Length: 280
Image (tube, rainbow, N blue to C red; front, side, top):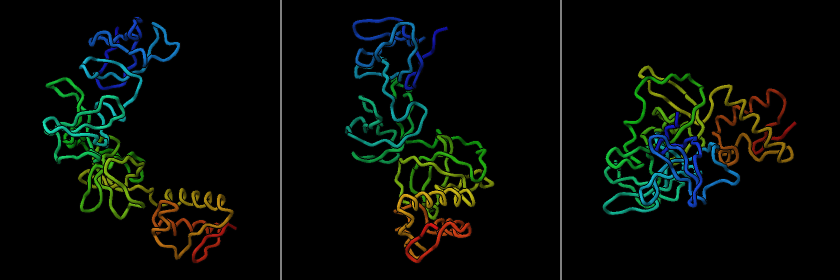
């Protein structure tokens, strides 16, 4: 049974024939899809399968490419605005030769060149073209998340909140990243590894960029020991160092730093001084 190629997705397709323009792949209901000569990997032959991204070229023809976009249809992403058109909308860099359109009607807030737009990538039902939409809320799951406190997740920073930042969790749910939990500055559209801090009774997620409790202390303790070994046994951070100094060197809060120091001190691995730490 022929593979069914999906527009805006990475597909594994069968090479069915060669031509002067490249190789044609079996796109199932989409017909044969051209992989241009400049895209064809060396030593590729008819009858083999290849992972390709299927999109439309500047003349609206369905084509294949071995280039991977930053995100594909059905995914959220933070993409930089490269240009705007007064009638059409904004154009986004998504890692492809042809930029991605974010129509004005799909922007809850007007974007400008240089902005990072948090978008969801879809197939426009009217034109059947791949576009971006900034109206992301309707694509997030409404069911209760099945996470446990301390569970590791991937976070995509969505927008500012009075309490911190809203973030998209594992490309599925919305959660709140509390400002007091931030060990370093962050920006809209950035992706970060994170952790579930709490799942409230109403299903709302509270997030953190740092593991909590023993998990956090253990990981940071190892980081401090590695830094001490790299610097000859002395680290220019101590009990009286400022939060900014600690964050600049270790990317963590002063509270977490002091907890890790306490753990290492109790193990008799370090000596703590006002402005430095020494490896024993």
